[in-house]
Length: 376
Ligand code: NDP
Ligand code: ZN
Image (cartoon, rainbow, N blue to C red; front, side):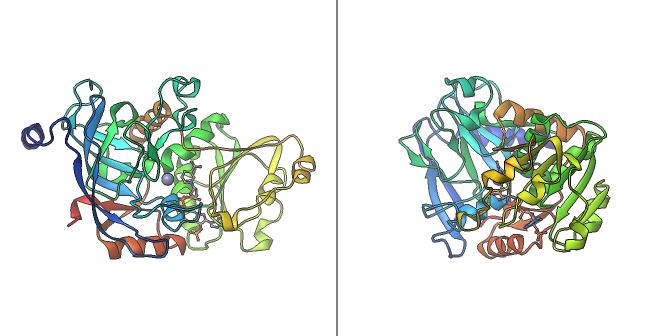
């Protein structure tokens, strides 16, 4: 009953909220330079188009990609920069053509807010590889809306194309859903692309936000998972989540004896490392998905001889996942109780500054999620 009253209240408020051509005023938290601090930032998003929905953001996850972007580690980031591409919220207004959502529904946004919808990749559910370019949740030119630069989800509201928003079931654990929209799909997608199955010997390199979800998906498939990370503090957590062994890669003795072992490896490492060590751990015919993308300054290099002398293994990159697969991942995760382990933080500059530093220092278990309702 209370829920119904809440939803009715949202309907009533939203029906008088924004008319068709009105830009949406938004409050958020932004960085103003690559070594700056988070500060309150008021901006606006484009008006709600006929195929769009307006979301009241409840929770926003902090992905390591936000840090790479916020600190200009992947090229020249434009400032002010509002990060956040792991967004869970509630629909408060819909465009006139929208049937996928109704006001009051939960909705999620990942890394993609729009795409051309016409090219082969879009038609095949690979919107992340849209031939015209996907419109990213932040730092992207929105070619549907005067090429304005998109700003992310460390904010109170988002306008998104309904076709690119994800339905979140009403019984989902909404505090923990947001990181599935990036960390979840980025690990789920290559695990399925490589067709991992029960009893396979597999490895997860980098046991952070992405890595701890990869472990859960792989364990759920019945694979035997080895986790490799630089931290000693996460050993017990890996075993608790179902890994069969944990390797602290800073201990060279522990690293020995893994050549030709694994049929699948996913690397989520965001820092400088030597990927060839892991190529050697693949058995013949094995596949390694690279998803971690370190700063350009620390980008690992693989030389051609590494492929020739570790032959008949496949090493490929993977970028998030398409919208249909993201929906599939979300439904699967909720149905199988696969969620990130999260620390909820307040939406203020100091909390975000601290969170960024702690992520880089390996001090988060395992994902920070910002409670956007605490934004002042
Ligand atoms: P986190 O910081 O949460 O996790 C990274 C983990 O890697 C940490 O546990 C960290 O160690 C560990 N690590 C660091 N160096 C090494 C090393 N040399 N060997 C093994 N483990 C190491 O980051 P996220 O999970 O959020 O993101 C990981 C990467 O994936 C980032 O580069 C991000 O940009 C990228 N990404 C890529 C996507 C894609 O579509 N391809 C989508 C989303 C993210 P410690 O225990 O000290 O923290
Ligand atoms: Zn991300």
